[in-house]
Image: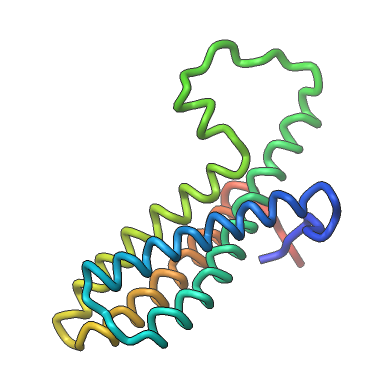
Length: 159
């Protein structure tokens, strides 16, 4: 999973910080759900595992952002003087914001995989182990989705 954008430059540092903050807030929501709705009381599991998953989701969102940015750069290089698309709905304009698409993809995939793997593993283990399995499994699936988007949508090839 190569990254072409240098994230420590001035242009992309603010985008990286926004992506990291959004992933952190998302994990705070997951912690809230885990404590109050799923009744997980182990404070070490509730704090330490989501910190690592926050970093993993941040890295996945950077990969997906980079994929969309490469496709957009390729499109503008092919047609530099193309006309604008016209009137778009508010929802479409919101989704076309560059940092919204990666975050929506990652959050939707994470939530679907988290709840499905949590309730499936709850059959075999207790709540704490099920939470651990669900968080880790969802983060791994998010990495696979980010890699899939990078390879198939952006068509990045490294030799």
